[in-house]
Image 1 (cartoon, each protein chain N blue to C red):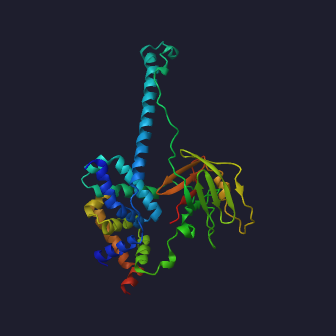
Image 2: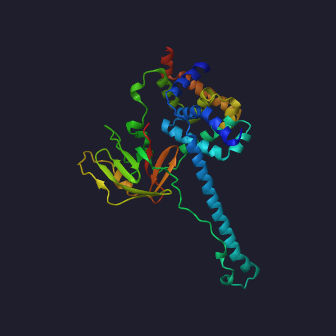
Image 3: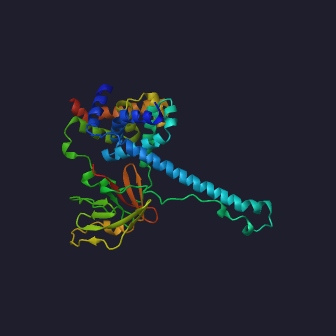
Length: 200
Length: 166
């Protein structure tokens, strides 16, 4: 195969992927958010340094000096720290590509007609399906902290074979991260519980 | 042209090729757009540095490849269940009849390094020197990876059938 053939084939493979216009506005928004976050974190760091310096300098220059009588650190005005912007955007429908059971192994069905496990997040509402039953409820995402609200409704169809423990594991999720376009729902130990991708 | 305009012009010209490069490297189309978007955001954050780079394409591809490579080293717990993906995220098996599909399958059979080398050289059309920069290896390593990848593709049965070879 010549280099020309290879390039031609790769071009044909690549052109099968429909690509929309570049999301320039979203990129600029993303950069603005990153810069704001840096500025806030920088301000917090600077304030912490100033406060630490205010408290430590009298102690270091006068070892007998009790820190209690130092100038109160409240003379420094701390910057207003807004609540963290969601670092992960959960919105839309995802396919479950990995589900890790509590024993640490895959809990996805391994053969037969693969049930489609999926989750839709929309405006604080979650709709998950384990291929047999559905869960509908609410969730809270604050920064990367995730919490599935209690009181969701689950259908109770008897499933043979038993459905994978998607709903049970969603209850263990405490944080969300993303990488390569995939979303990872993680438990309190930081272990991935569920991996999600958008349907292609 | 100021930094933002320069960035806009660059992205408008390169976006489809970067997204498709990511797909050829192994991302799903949706993943590819997310990855390229997030990497370009990072480039915009440091656009002055990117502009100052002697080879902007090599710089951007390097960011892309590093992201892709690090994602393959990502921490995981236990086995990788993605080997048994639901069919919705698997490649479209039903359309596996034409030469482009044969190429996709052949790419998947290559190792990650060889696949990256083929995509960068024959799709992104980087020179071997640029590839050495992007991959962080010596030019000789680029040559040997490419040679091995081409040998593997030449021996690939699906592509052989495509050429009418025995």
